Picture 1 (tube, rainbow over the protein chains, first blue to last red):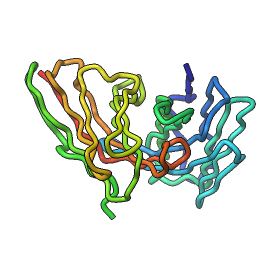
Picture 2: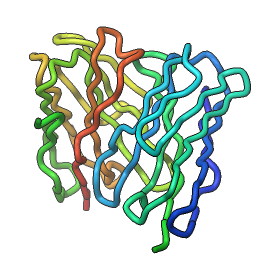
Picture 3: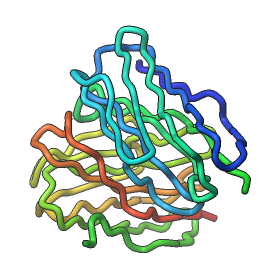
Length: 111
Length: 115
């Protein structure tokens, strides 16, 4: 069974800092990997989707990379802002009924 | 843009009661799914559907029932609620017939407490 791990579970950084969130997975046979943001008491908001044939995707201050062979993905956030504070989840899809989520990294950006 | 809409947002049930969580999407997505989110366990797939009239089980289907009579709606039924079903439930949809490659869009969640 695919295992998805996100370390650290929590991270605090001062405003303006660039930061990297990590996601690792055990089985490289994936269709895609998706990064989400979840605010307290809310649903998941899709940030970036990387197909298995892609190496990275960018949206504004966010850049996500994918290295299937090593089972790793990183989410890079540039010039962090207090509004970036949330829990970030990665999910790996291996089929229609196989989407595996990490337990998330809770990010706090301190003004 | 409504996206994925879930109702109710909050519900309290007594053990043994039944209820239905509603999910509707207006993006004409073929793939729809239900997840539950529990502290320390991440999101787990309950049931999914790759199109109207087609449903299948996910990782944790016991105690739940689904049907997909239209492309837009995918209700989740709790047959006889148990305290172990206390959780936050999320409905999600994705374009594409098989759901393998499409971006997943989530509703705001339904918080269920079973006493």
